[in-house]
Image (cartoon, rainbow, N blue to C red; front, side, top):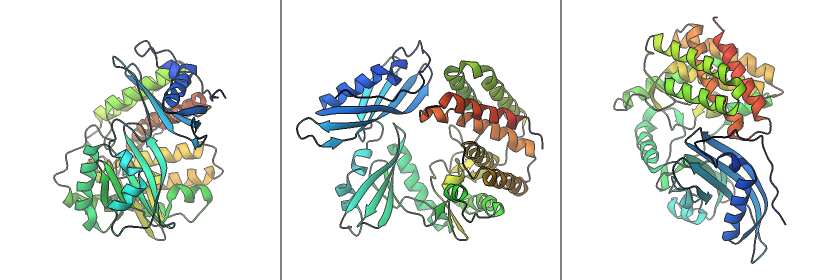
Length: 405
C-alpha cells in the first residue's frame, strides 16, 4: 500500500536551503518511506507533524508514521526526523536516536529506567509526551500501573546544569519540579507535582487561584532562590531577557513564511528594539524564564512550578509579559472559555504591575516581543491553517504595541 501524506501549506523557496521546501511535500515523504524500508518497515502513512526552521540555515521536519514490519506484519509507528542544513549533508533519524540527545535512547528504555530507580518498581511503562529534535523530550513513566514519574531529556550540558540547580534549590520550600536523578547523559528523572495545570483549570472552568497569588509566586521565587544562586551567570542567550537579535530573527521567519506580513513583523521588531534600547535596565531578579499558565500546577492553595530549564537571573517583567502573551494566544485559539481567560489575564497583568511597581507601557512592549516570538508557533506544529493563525498572532503583537494604559 502506498503511503498517504497530509500536506500543509507549502514552504516558500529558500535559495540557501534548496532541499528545504521539498521536506514538506512529496520529496520529504519519499525520503521517510525509503528510510523506513531500509529498517524493514512498510510505511502506510507519513505525515509532517513539526517543522523547526531558521531561514537560510536549517530546517528539521518531524513526521508521524504508521508502518508494519516486513517480516512479521506487526504495527510500528516511529517518529522520523529529516534535517536539512546549509553546507552539510542531510540527516535522517528515528526517535529516540537523536544525534544531540544521547540520553534519549536509555530514557525510553523502561527496563533501564527501572534498574536506575530505588527501590526498583516491578514495571516501568514509558509514554513519550513531547519531542523537539536536538533540544528536548518529555516522557511519562508509569510505575506499577499507578505511580507517575517524568523523564526530561536535554543535552548533556543542560542536564548537568539542571542537576546542579536541583541540589541548590531543594531547600527553598517552594514546590518545584526538580530532577531527583538521571538515567543517562541529559536524561533526568523528575517527580510528578501534585495538582492540575492552570491551563486545564482555565479551559475547564475550574477553581482558579487568585491573580494576586500567581503574581506573588514570582516574588517568592526571586526572594527564596536569589541567595542560593549568587554564582549564576547573568542572562544572555536565554529567554530571561529581551534580546534584539531574537526579535529580528522572529520577524525574519515571519517574513519568510508570510511575505505579505513582512512589513508588519518588521515594525513590531523595530518598535521592540527601540523600547529595549531606550528603557532603563530592568532590576535583575531570579526568574522562571518561560512562565505561562501550563507551567503552574494548582493544588488547593499551593502553587508549583515545572519546566525550570531557564531559571536564573533575568527580567521579571518579561516573565509577566510572557504569561500575559500566552493567555492572549490561548483566548484567541477559539477556546469556549475565552471570556474567562481574557478577564483572568487583565487581572493578572494588573497584579504583576502592582507587585513589580511598573508602568503598563513597560509591560506592553515586552508582551509584543513575546507575541512576535509566539507568532510562528502554528507553523512549528504545522497547523492546517498556520498562515491565518500566524497572521492573527502578529496582529495581537501589533495591537499590544498600541496600548499605553
